[in-house]
Image 1 (spheres, one colour):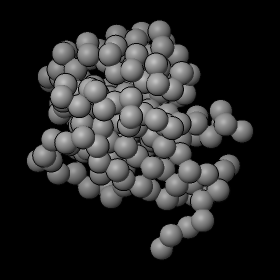
Image 2 (tube, rainbow, N blue to C red):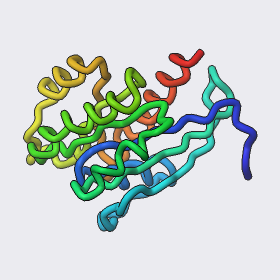
Image 3 (cartoon, rainbow, N blue to C red):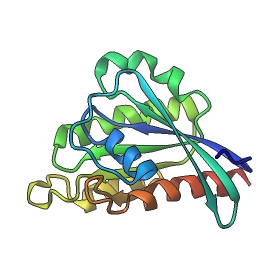
Image 4 (cartoon, rainbow, N blue to C red):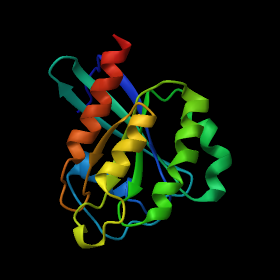
Length: 174
């Protein structure tokens, strides 16, 4: 069943390979988790139609960008027309956090001040967390973003993260 959306928003998922971008989007759309997704090659396009109280029918077009270095040259193309982004790192991998600066800069170069939300994924692996929330919050503040910790595996804060960026986009555009 397709709805006639009042609003269509394009959201890009940004971050290194294997931080859980695909897992997050499938948790959001289908409320399912698989531990064995293949790496996204190029871009994966997904859509979720929903009702959001203040805005009515909203269609979220989600662009899951491949995180491999080999796709860096395509980023600008994929970011074209994006209304916002989820910037994602793996809380158990410091390198995925350190590479966020490139992703954030690429998004800012392409989209200016469109809303971004910082996500620290894999909060369920609490014994292996290497990036403290306080460090992530500092990065988020530096780029005028909010921060949220998620687990695609348990579903913790996943819907909240997507809804937060969608509402920020819609609030900004109205």
